[in-house]
Length: 198
Image (cartoon, rainbow, N blue to C red; front, side):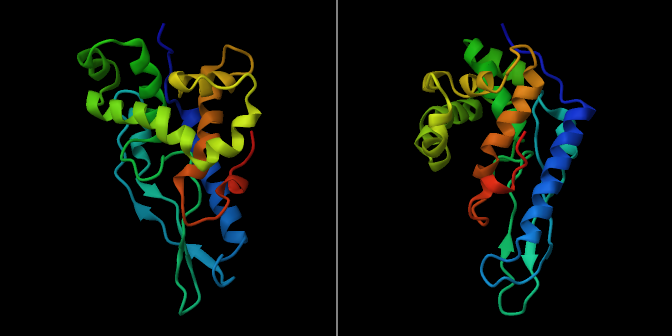
C-alpha cells in the first residue's frame, strides 16, 4: 500500500521555519574560519518536486551566509530540510520517490506515480541503500535504531522509525528530513547541531 502524502501549507511553513532557524543559528556561531560576522548571501535554486512535491517548487532561494571580513569572505551554507544537497529535486521528493518506487514494479508505474524519471529514482534508491549507509551520518547514528534499520528497505525503514504513533506519516517524513539535514552542507562543520531537534 502506497503512503498518501500532500505537501500542504503547514508542512511548507515548517520547512521554511526550520531552515530559517538553522540559518540564524549558523550566523550566530560566526565564521568558522576567521570568527568574522556572517551575512545573508542566499542564492537561486530551481527545485523540482515531481508529482510528489509540486507545492515545494516555490522554494527558489537556498539560504546561505557569507563572511563579512575582507580577506575571508568564505561561504557558510546552513543545513537544509528543503534541499537534499546539490540534487535538483526537493528532499521530500527524494524521500517519497524512494518509498513509492519500492511498491511499484515497472519504470512506467514509477514515472506515473512520481512524475520523476525511473533512472533518476533508481539512482536515488542505490544511494539510499549504499551511499547513505556508508556515510558518516549513518555510521555515527545507526546505534540510535534498535533493532537495526533494514538497509534494503531504506528510506522507508528510516521514515517508519520516526513515525512514533504509527499513523502520522507527514510528521515522520519531516522528522526524517531533519535527521538527514546535515548531509545538505559541507561548509558548516557538524551541521547536525544547527538543525532544530523535533
